Image 1 (cartoon, rainbow, N blue to C red):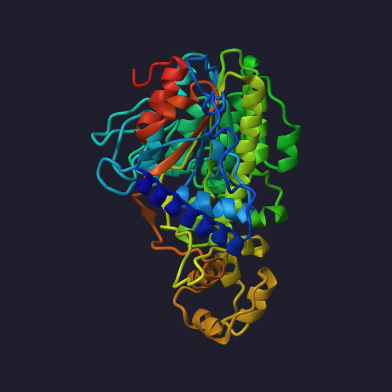
Image 2: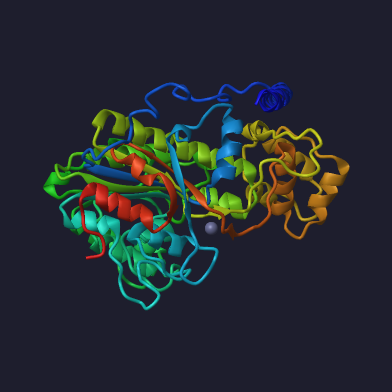
Length: 462
Ligand SMILES: [Zn+2]
């Protein structure tokens, strides 16, 4: 016994030494070390036990975000993210016809509790309509809202209030969102609501005019959104379409009149909370996924930061309200992001260098001249890096200049990528508020809306 204990103590000593060295090498981040409640009596913080009443659900979906993004983001920020302490479990994401899901099948699973084929929205593989958690909540008289930084007709928001065989058919999704009478719709994609005669994608219908007849107030700028106030109990609704297509990536948003994701979230909550029957709100950080497809680590971190500000709005409201359940979970991982890359003899990561990147790789590539001879100038305009001669040449000769730029910036941060598409890895779920602990453990993406429905006391799939 004594000998064994000695070995354990020795191993622990070695581990502590190694750990201490590691922390010194990488600097000593504030978030390192155990959470406040660890080791003490009483268990986790009192934010989710029992069967307390849930009046409202705020479902926050960072598209493409997984534990790899969470770790890099914590180091980027150099402290815990708002969701870290609310980590509950992990869930699988495979679709009905593929081990790797797209956002349509994932959104459908997370909205309806049923798996479907990739590309399909709100229908099962046989083509039958599936009821969504938003629709089930609305049936009980609750208010509802959808917020996104993509077009509002994009796969994830569409999965909560429309039913189409092909996610690309956004002109068919738009009228369904309005017919579903979602009380608050905020995002991009104005063109999907306007007729061709006005530069839009609808053949002849002007859905914005129809929406206004239905009681929607239209807002198109950040200022108009911040000034808007609707009376939900009186049947007023809010339609915010802030761009013809998607909103700008977070790092370019300042050059626009578009609101931030946090401002849209705050506005949605402020309007929806007036409904006496409670509300269901879905908020998507849409472009984390696009950053992942582009292998653009700076875009990924800065859009995660914007998403975190939106989650802070939701949790702040939930803390005051006491009857609001906030659930945060990505729909799948994108890009196979790594924490650490290359030979990396120092075994380090360096995401904070991404704070000084002020444009996406796509944007930088668009500013290259025909022979790409201005590559150094472009990179120095939008980053703090100076390219080596070899790196400049790599970008000049690359088939895909944006991908080459993003790879070189990722190398600086020691963030790697293994795919330009989605991956099939399990996803963490975070929850705060009454009944948050029901998300504990090993889950499937179809479990999430079922747990929400149970917590709200609404019947899903009737
Ligand atoms: Zn994607």
